[in-house]
Length: 387
Image (tube, rainbow, N blue to C red; front, side):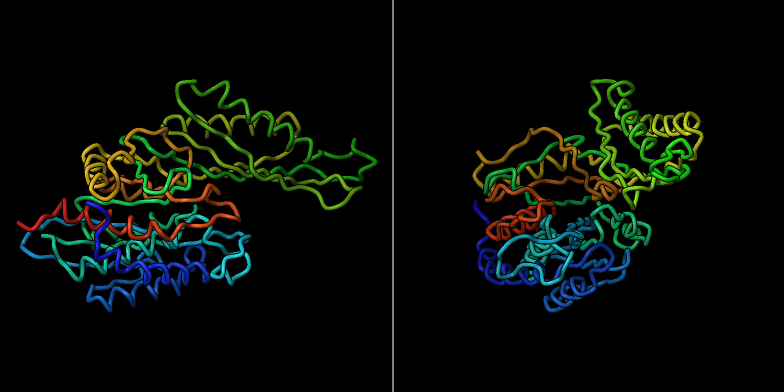
């Protein structure tokens, strides 16, 4: 069974919605226009709409046929990235410094396609909660919705999410049972030394030298403290210091991220980072403040829900294109927090084009919109069949 014919019939409209969202990107917790479009569409299709969870989040509620008490959540993220777009698309971003470089415009559109189809057919017995989440890109949108009572107000027995995947071929769907995406910490380390003239370094506590020494020392944490059978990454992605050629700065800042698949390993890395910062501070007689924040939980796909995704995928795409065992991804996804509260699964939909997400030249393939929408719809019809 291929993609759902009725959803294929929406393809032109879905593409128009997606390209409109792409041209008007909004970053985390600023998705006012986007959430408004989502709410309007859901309302037009007769779906009960709730706004304001997690700030700009939207939840649609739809009851199917029959009397089943089962409830399933389908989630899409809505936010763009704070980066420039470098494409020549007619529907490229119209807002400087804002770009749907991760394809969340596509995810939102896919879930809208699913919502319309299910509202028209209601070929399921139970309740669907369409969860449109803000601020996935490291700002804690999932946690914000949960804190606002997402699963108390809209209880779910299962939750499902998806992501586009330019590293897969068009028509491929991948599901990885077990730990599938890394947990992540973000960190800001501030070094307060003592500035001086560039010609008189002996009068300084040189924040640049301290920063480079600290950066080198932090790179030993994974190689010398984390057991080698536990994958982990510590990346320093920003160094800020100085303002002139002849001024030794008194302050420097290191920023970056930690990734691992084990919360114990993440705790170990945090402990070692703080200890190294304290040691370097003592050695250089300066102050070092380490702000290390738990940003993403480890995403763990439950076995039962993973099998459902695999089974459904074989009805939507060529069964030979369903990938059930891939390498876990060091990338992170805050849908993990929803899956810690409710069992679920998260899968990837491959598409044409090889430019990776978060690259200024990334382009989403609109041909996958009916595939993602059909996947979500078939999951609902499979898990809550009309009896």
